[in-house]
Length: 276
Image 1: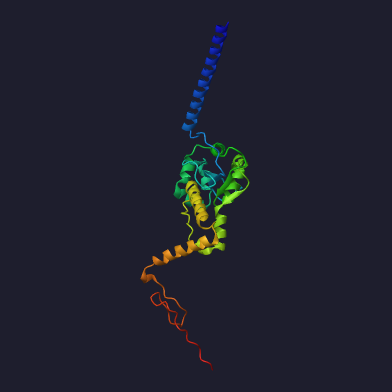
Image 2: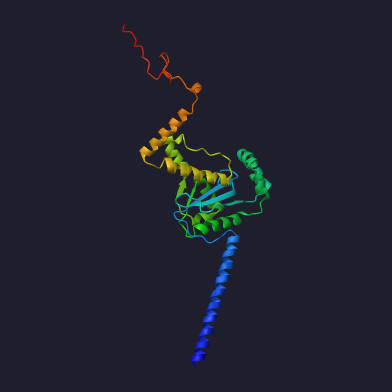
């Protein structure tokens, strides 16, 4: 009887081990499949920013449409969580593309976006689903990821109509780099003059990457103490002045006065008017 019980227990243990091994292999196959499809298991991102940039047929969110979208997710330290971003182009026919305004026809044509739109086989619904899956891979919980970008309120207006499920998954607040730029230009114009400028290539991916770099720059130089910012401006200004060639040095002084130069920095004596 003891032998039978031992045998039964051994068989039960063997079945459990076989089942666990099967589950393990199945899980591995599942993970391999997700990795091959670009959806490897990842840990949720801390303090995530969901950077989205859209290219549209115009700026009227009632009648114009999103034709290209790119998304990059960063953590709270502005580190990109994965090198591969999500980017896709939505198909529209020639009639829609020809109805764009002159600016869009010129720039989307020059960047090659118009050609991509005509050749794309993706619908708006398909792109919305793919974009939502990409975001959920890093930000699975709703109302956690914060939408970020440059003048991103405009992108959000279009997405409310065309990608409502994406907007519903994100938090209601925004991080708009252009707002920080505008505040800096008014609060510290000397520093704002040194800020990096966008290249204006008007492609969704390049716009996002430039926006992230801009926010990194403002974090390093503007979102600091007043003394740290002043020291940075002084250092950069000195570097610029030292790089100016002697022939480019300007003479200073007011009209009618003896002009002082860099070689003769002493302030000239100003002639006083005679008393009548």
